[in-house]
Image 1 (cartoon, rainbow, N blue to C red):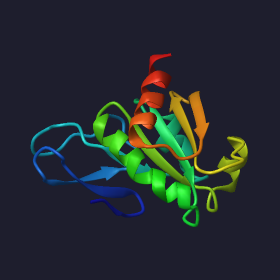
Image 2: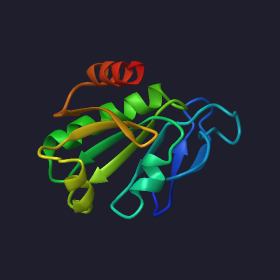
Image 3: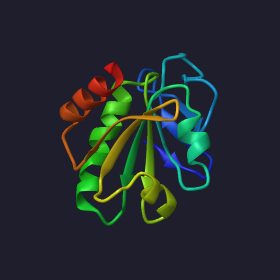
Length: 147
């Protein structure tokens, strides 16, 4: 239920159903403007705004390096969005299209997609390649954040 714009997305609050506009980068943690519950934060980044969107985030970020032509990437996307919804207010999901962000692909040595990286305060905590179901991804994220 997200419609993407250049700098913000619209997210429906899972608690009350109201629509909220979320910026790609913000100083705090997104909350519903009506019921004040944490919102799942799913956005995109590229070579030009990665530092602002990911490295400056106050909460941990799962970066999904993907491509629209990649079948496993399309399969893992709903599972990642479920993890982001389950951890709303504690995790940000940022999707990076490798075809549009070659410098980031090189910087993070992306050899296969999907490649997932957990980053907190600009530091890589964990990474994995390949698709997995939501419970396995949730376990991986929980483990990465516990370290």
